[in-house]
Length: 401
Image 1 (cartoon, rainbow, N blue to C red):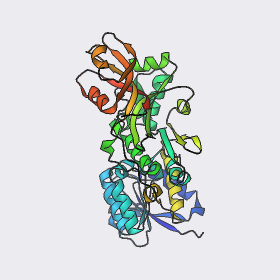
Image 2 (cartoon, one colour):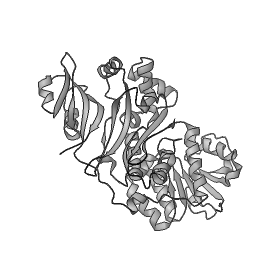
Image 3 (cartoon, rainbow, N blue to C red):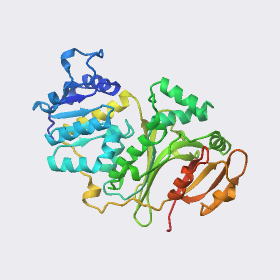
Image 4 (cartoon, rainbow, N blue to C red):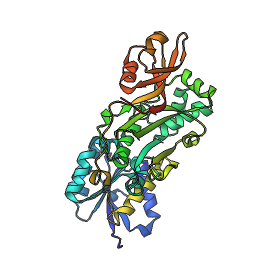
């Protein structure tokens, strides 16, 4: 198969953009070069000559010699406008912006089909782990039953520090910020948004299911307290923020993002620091596990490079599960087994919101109930005025409703 030369217009020259430039310089066989770089701040000192940069997006989007756009900026709305314009003029795009893609997923798929241009985004989920390509190609004929993963490196680093070094969640967050693993405003990570956007992309490729991010249940690690962490230590468990989706007996998909108790026999137990890990289970090939660095300039740049290489062979996602199968729908009735921590009410009052209760603990100021409930009731419990209420997942329970 012949390989075409890619002339790249790059948007953004932060850590990942600079990492990409360095990797491309060391990979001459790729037949891809960065022709122009669009940045926002004209006063910022940069490592390349001024003539390599522009501050006007049209200098890239209207340049017929540029056939590929790589989008690596933080602003998801600005990224959406750039990607949409690039696709409409027939330029293929590589992006790492999971929020932008998740919020406009269906429209961006339609634009690709309409224009024939490709949008690749392996770097948007798990950085160096090639999970999207595997879901799209390897699992195209195998009935996927379950996918679960640690997909956010920042929260995994924080949880590792609380478990291994006995730091408080706040101290671990501050350390992650000092090392550049977490932003000064860490809400996207610790409140679970980043993991949810990634799960939306995984749902599209794993099951052909396109969903609005607002419809996916999400609970971050910001509510975790000492009670849950101590419970994990006593039971030889770890707490990990997981994104999980599984096919129910009725064909619908259960999906959520939550902290979860993970035991030592689970491959995710050993995924620590900024590493990511993803488990899949299929009808024929059973269980498989992927692990790798989920954050950092070079791991992310390596995923971008992989997409650039794929574009040089005219590769594009076919979204086969949407094209050849009836896409599964997202279930509105999802039952879960959780530890729910609360204060200000009795165990009996809280237990009324559970279908089954296996363990309770009543104390002052905090108590907990372990049992099975559904996500709607759990959401209600979490939104009540009880101080510091939280929940940690054990498992999604097969719904018989």
